[in-house]
Amino acid sequence: MATNSSIIDRVRLELGDQPSTFDVTVQGNGTAVRYETGTYPLDGASLTVTVNGTVNTACAVEERTGVVTFDAPPADGSAVRFKGTKYRYFGAVDLQKFIDSAIAEHTHNRTDAFGRQITIATMPGVEEYPLSLLGAIKALWALATDAAFDIDINAPDGVAIPRSERYRQLLEQIAALTEQYKDICSALNIGLWRIEVFNLRRVSKMSGRLIPVYIEREIDDNSPPQRAFLPTNTYGTEPFPMTYTEYDLKMTQGDAFSITLDFDFDLSIYNVKAQVRQFAQSQTIAAEFTVTVIDAGLGKVTLSLTSTQTARFPLKQVWDVQITNSSAPTDTHTALGGFVFTHPQVTQ
Image 1 (cartoon, rainbow, N blue to C red):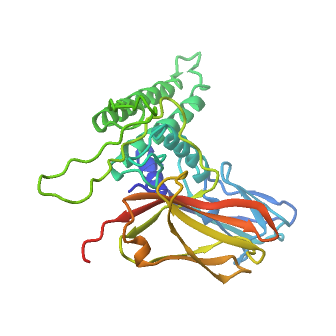
Image 2 (image 1 turned 180 degrees about the horizontal axis):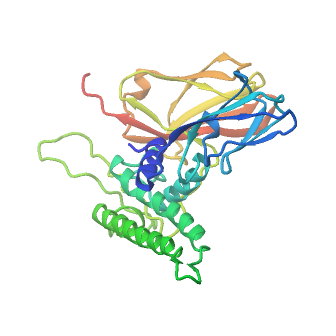
Image 3 (image 1 turned 45 degrees about the vertical axis):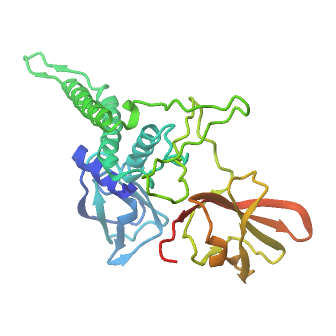
C-alpha cells in the first residue's frame, strides 16, 4: 500500500533531490534580526537554531530562501548556529503540492469495487511508482519554467554560453518520464492513460434500475448467492461527495462487535443513535447499536452489537451515527457513517 511519505521519497529519488545535512555558524551583531543560512531550500521542521549553545525557538524560517528571522536580535559577538536538512531543488511544502496534484489526476473519477473514491490510502502498492513518476514530471515542469527565462550569452571574444540548453534538457527528461508513465499506466490500466471498460449490464424497464450481478458458484456450493459489487460508472460525473466523516466498519458474522468513538465536543445535552441498514433508504433496520456513554464531557462513547445481531449480516451494508440535541429534537446531524463489511463465519 502506498503512503504519502513513500511517494515523497520516491519522487526525490527520481529528481536526484535527496536530503542532506548542513551546519552553519554566523556571528550576531546585536542589531540584525535576519540571518542567511547560505543554503536553501531547507526543511524548517528539522532546523535547530542555537545562540551561544542555547536553543532559540523565537524565530521564523523561510524555507525557500534559507533566511531565519529572530524576534529579538542576537547579542553582539554571539555564535548563531543553524543545523538541519537541506534539499537541492524543492522543500517539503513545495514538493507536497506537486504530489497532491499528481494524486488528484492519477485517481480522477476512479472508484473501487464498492463505489468509493480511490485515495492514496486505498491505492494498490503497484501504483506507487507510476504515481511518483507523475509527481516528478510536475516538479520538472516547475524547473523548466524557471529555466525558460535563461538566455544564451554570446561574448564579443567568441565565448558562447548556451544557457537555454538546460531548458531543452529538462523538456527531453519530461518527455522521457511521460512516456514511461504512459507505458506503465497502459500496461496496468491505471492513471491518466487507463482504458475504461464498461460492462453491458441489464437495466429493468419497469424500474429503470440495474439488474444485480451475482458471482458464479460451483455446482456443489449451496451457500447463499454472493452479490458482485461492480464499480459504479460515473458517466463523466464526479463521485458523490460525503457531507460527514466517512468511516467503514469491519466485523465477522456471529461475533460481538464494539467500537469507541471520541467526538470533539461535550455530549451532555445530546442523544447518540446509530443503526445498520442494508441500504440508506431501507425500511428495515438490520441492527441498532447499543450506545454507552463513557465520558460525556470528553465526547467518548462506545457502540456495540451482540453476536446474535451480526449472525445474519450480509457482505455489505451501511451505517451512520446521528447526534440529536435533547432539548431541540429537530437539531439533528449525522456525524459519522460509511459501509459495514462483514466476513462470513466459518466455525459455528
